[in-house]
Length: 248
Image (tube, rainbow, N blue to C red; front, side):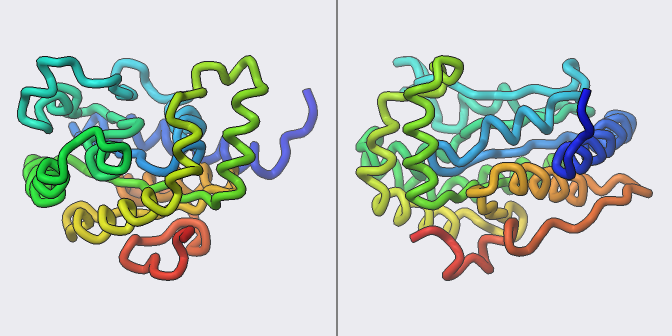
């Protein structure tokens, strides 16, 4: 086996910290909920894979819900997500979440304007209930440049191992780039309450993004005695400081 490069060494060290932090979180009965949102091909799957790789499968769940059923479309919007929330000692990662209604649904016309407005009003209240119940809520928006997204989407179509990443909506990601930008900006502004702030991650460099995402999680969970560098402020930053730094 060859010598590990700097990225592999840094990732392994952070994964060791993640395992130790999860063991402590289980002892403390913490409920950790991590929401991954972002543009198509921004690296959500890859980041989640590195986070969960060595964590306890019994106390770790990744939630990636499919298209709602007819019955679910008649429910309270947040109802289909509630059963997947973490219990004491669990870490739950949402690979896309209720924020579909703040992005793909209004952009693609999958919800009505009234439903969209209702969501933007309700989401902060819903998340207030979550954090009030003791859930550690961490929300990431993964940002990517238009050129890098086009490159990654093209790579998907030619790689047989990425077959399940290919979506009928991939082409729309580029065609409706500006619409998605507007929806993103409004979502970050209106749903980033103090109790549920957004953290933006620049992901054109996937490896750097993964390392900084893990660093942020470790600082948020805050295990006593953990020794982890602060995230790079050029790669990961609060949404309220993102003006002029998000991809237009």
